[in-house]
Every structure is written in structure tokens, then in C-alpha cells.
Length: 89
Image (cartoon, rainbow, N blue to C red; front, top):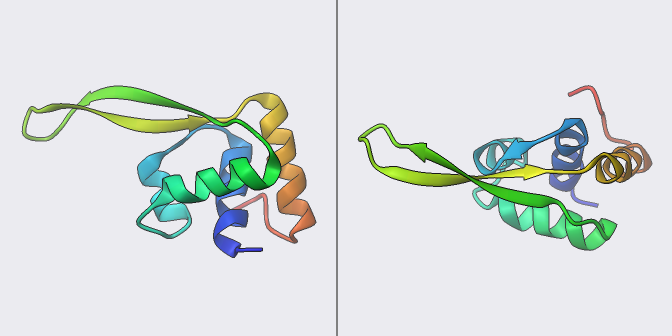
């Protein structure tokens, strides 16, 4: 199993993760791909909210924030443990 998936699962098991955070945690330039892989492999439905924000130059935009439910966090924790990952990172 990909160590990227395990690291991302450990972070999501703690709560919400933004798209940018997912990119850094994996590390990858396509964090949403790894969220999709977790959804598929663990049969979970991690919600992605689009949060409005204003960029440094004043332009309005949105960023993605993945928020697992309590039940999904339990599945993510179990997956991390099963894969020998670290939940304390």
C-alpha cells in the first residue's frame, strides 16, 4: 500500500484536511487523486466542501476542504494501524 495513502489517511483520521494540506502531506501535486484512492479502497465518502476565500491579489476563489465523518475517521484510523502507519504524525 502506498505510504502516501497511509500518511493522508492518518491526517484525515484527525479531521478536516484542505487540498493544499493533502498535497503537502502525501507529498504530491495532486492530493485529490489520493483522497479518491482512499474513498475507493476503504469504501468511504469523504465530503469535500468548497470554501470561499480571497486571494492575495483580492481575487475571489474557493478551496477544497475534505471533512470525514466520525465513522469515516474510524475506518481511516483502522486502515493506518493495519498498514503499520503512525497516527501521531
